Length: 182
Image 1 (cartoon, rainbow, N blue to C red):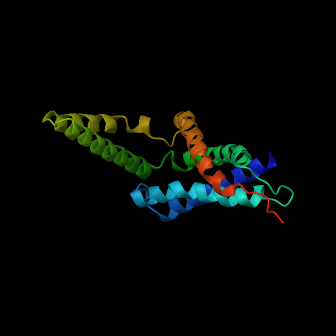
Image 2: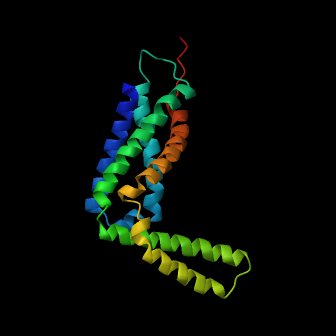
Image 3: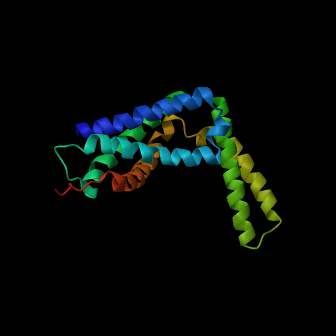
């Protein structure tokens, strides 16, 4: 249990530091850039590997199977993400610039996927009208759809449960260890 807490709280603390750096030294539009989003997918995996190796690979347990590593990394990752989510809500719940960038990202994502799907289905002149109608609906519901609010906490935790599993499955590959044969 202490290993899970050390890894999870370490991951959460590092994510909080990264969040503070982003908040005070980057703009929200940078945060939603494809390059940053790609890097942000790798950071938790790298941190899980580093923290997992630090706290799970000890001299008193030379063998660490994939399953054992996963048994510790999955709840630790979920704890770390939960800490990060709660902190992010405190940090961004009233940030109007972040709300605007979040809305813009959602609109761009919708427009791209809708247009691509419509073009694959043969295209139509109704596409432009439907996209404009949906854009206005997204603008009208921007406050309800914003992820950094307390009402979205259960959804965010559910999403982080899934992410924790995926990240842990990957990180456990690099954390497991066989005892060296002498």
